[in-house]
Image 1 (spheres, rainbow, N blue to C red):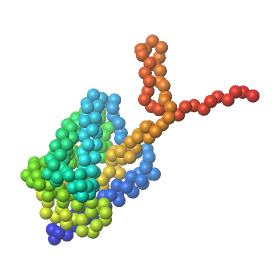
Image 2: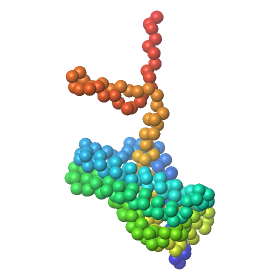
Image 3: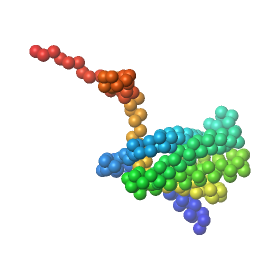
Image 4: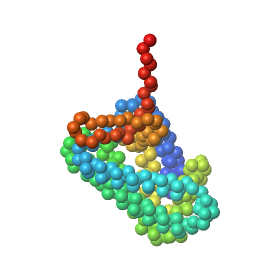
Length: 250
């Protein structure tokens, strides 16, 4: 029975979450574009928002990048580079711990702002609050895995997660057996992480797909000037295409 539940949770559930995340996002973008936004409330408690948002986003990008590289890079690549499992695990614990604490402080500020400011709370949907609390719980679980990882620095447990993640990506049918006997805190962290992908299309997280990286490829600049006598002339960083030349009249 335990093996069957483990197979469902870590063999089938990841694919369900991935399918819902991808096709749910496409469906929402196609049918509900007016809801495709992060629902900014930056006019209220702007300083708290700035600190919380910056700390959260920097931390989460480091964490996501670390998980992506650490889990999906084949083990033979680290062996070829001479990186031992012990060193990789210590690096993951250190970098992940620092980024996790940054992220935790940031999301604590954002959650406090969302829950305890009456005006922000009144303009928040259930999904806005729920996803913050889910992310908060996931961060706590992730930080709770560090002391457990410190108890076995040989990297044996870490290799299990690498094998599991790579087996899922390569569609191997026996992926779940890699995490059959891992510590429950890791299983809870994995389950909640996959659930975040499951609810992704139905929350404000969809704005991740619209990160404005395309601004980096635009040519020309838009110059924005202040009113006369109001101070120095600011130049906006937003780049715009140059206007077409004016043709002389016949």
